[in-house]
Length: 94
Image: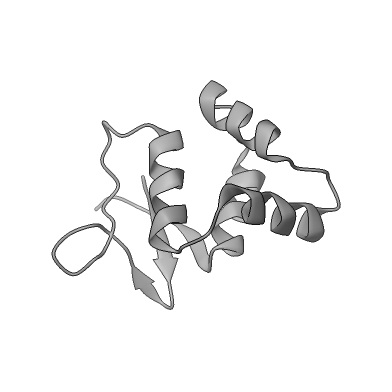
């Protein structure tokens, strides 16, 4: 199984077309921070949006902690993707 982020109905990857490819050597913290930079969104704005959408309080510190400890839940990953205009899809490897 592989996970693909979709933005405006297009899979994303970083290459010459400014797309982001998931690099299995890249940790989740670096990957999410790259997405934030690509979408010009500070982590403070992400925390605010996540708090608004979920009703649970997220702060810059709590997000950095979760990213550093690699303890984001799938629900939180979906919330992050949604906040920056993406969705997560699971595709079967053929």
